[in-house]
Image (tube, rainbow, N blue to C red):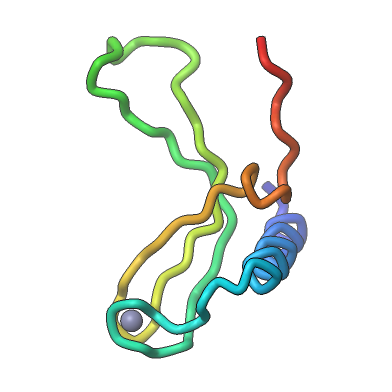
Length: 88
Ligand SMILES: [Zn+2]
């Protein structure tokens, strides 16, 4: 994904989190200094065969605390930043 598009997703996701009154402080150390990025992760499901296609993907805003390294994720679809796919 293009970097400027990723930054737009990050900005929109951060706006949504602010609207939802999500606390800005790290839950582990209390710092407020995050490294944010938008990406998709493959989620391994231990009950599905390894070759199941397509593998489940979750687009997320990932946040890493620059002070203690705590990492957390927010689902970009749930935040309304990426459209939900129609049910199949
Ligand atoms: Zn921290």
